[in-house]
Amino acid sequence: MDCIFCDIASKTAEAEIVFENDKYIAFLDINPINYGHTVVIPKTHYDNFLTIPSEELAELTKITQYLAGAVKRALKADGFNIVSNNGLSAGQSVFHFHYHIIPRYENDFFMKPRTLEYNDMEIPSYAEKIKEAVSKYEGLLNG
Ligand SMILES: [Zn+2]
Image (cartoon, rainbow, N blue to C red; front, side, top):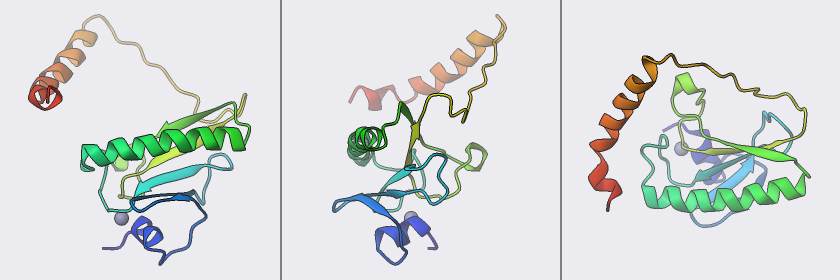
């Protein structure tokens, strides 16, 4: 399989690594949104958020939390975004699950969120669709 993140994990591709243990690795994004933009991945290949086992997702999230604090302190950022793009339509470009840690500064103007408004008819129908899907997995959530 041709995967740049697998290559980085196996050291067959170069990256500026900022953290590594036996299962996870973090490195600088070569096309940063702000300098210090960091990518955190499991060394094992999983396509996306839905296919990584939940235990590994929990470990990866814990590491990402730690690294986000380090990035914020190291770069004197005012804040940061934790982003995971899943699927082409969401902007995923490497299909190996990863979190982005993007340091943010006052007035850096990046990614200004847009907001939409629901009309009264729409909001319950969106909620119903999601609740119906959630109910199918309730057994899983309740352990
Ligand atoms: Zn991979």
